[in-house]
Image (spheres, one colour):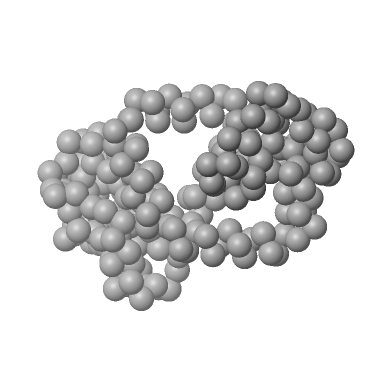
Length: 216
């Protein structure tokens, strides 16, 4: 913006603090208009209320365009945005925790829906958290397990249970139970179906196999 335009904007703000909106036609204060440095007035031609209504109508009438635009922005900026968010959370853990708790209290249905969606899309992370919680309860030894380790175990199993050799939906099991001193470590993990995992529980593997797996 040139010097003359800047002086004109300052003069208009102080001498003529009202500005007509090109959409609704109402006279409104300059603060009711968004900043637009490319214009001589320094403000957008339409007010913030009209701009908000237009954006909402646009998203409602053209959802596919809006989703495509959001997806493109996410793909272009994902690493940078993730890095910025991660840095903020590390520097503001208490503030972030307070914000999360407040959001849960104020909008429980939204947070519950978001939580369910996240769990569906991040099954390995859910397994990671559950296994880590169980390991902490018994103070289990080991180097720990992350989502990458769990995904590796699942991929190597080819969808087949390590105990019954049947193709079923799989879970992650500690071969040597944590309750009996087993390590919370990738080398102590196996992909097992829910039936075998529930039947084995905290039994030593050899004892459980000797008793006939599910019949035990």
